[in-house]
Length: 341
Image (tube, rainbow, N blue to C red; front, side):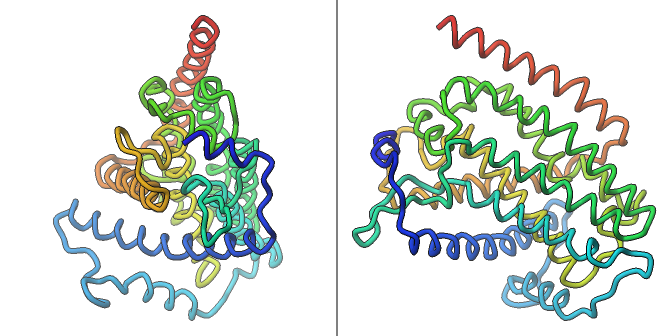
């Protein structure tokens, strides 16, 4: 598999291929989110001994479409105390940064499609991991602006929680990847996948993998770390004053971020498109990645149905006093072993 990556070093795709891939990736993101949303509601129903969506369409499969139509046709409004331009800009920032991060997930190696070499990914930059964290840092401004520009103290408190939570857990998440980067010797996501041909990094880096998974829940504001949107405390957090299509943009960005962190976990720790003991044909690669991503999404839903929400002081204490020291120790031990071996 590594030969396919090395064979295209310095290769630049034609402009029309890049445009076509952008359209395809956007279409995939738009299609995956409703599927994930429906799967989550169905799974939560089963976990809680109820049916879940079962009225709209066959087996309730048209429920996401009904939700989209409902949100898109709602009358737009904003509070009189809000700051109009920033209030409208916040969900746009969240949505664009989520889609930009989605473009870095590799769904396969370079494939020959109708005589043209095409990378089964949006981008393959040499700083792939840093690219993801850069857009994650920009996404923070969408949450902050959404809460502050709403003119509501509950929204602002939710956005401040989101900012503190993102900063706290992004440090641990970044350090959890350092061990993999030292072992692979590269920041390129496709090359990291190629380096896992014999052994997935989730095995030697099981501590980093566990830290990454926990931090991913906090990064995406999911249970048990959904404090920025704690309905019992903050009504709905930073998006309390949002409705209609602007709320849908925040909602869509949240689920795209879940898919992105799942894709990053699959790429860096679970071998990407590679399968153990099997070398499937190239056209199977995207389906392998999607299957692993959906397995990771199932974990998100399972945890949501199982664990209660933490208190905010518990969340911050766990991030700084437990995850950060463990991630630092894991990076130091890995560095020693890489040098010694």
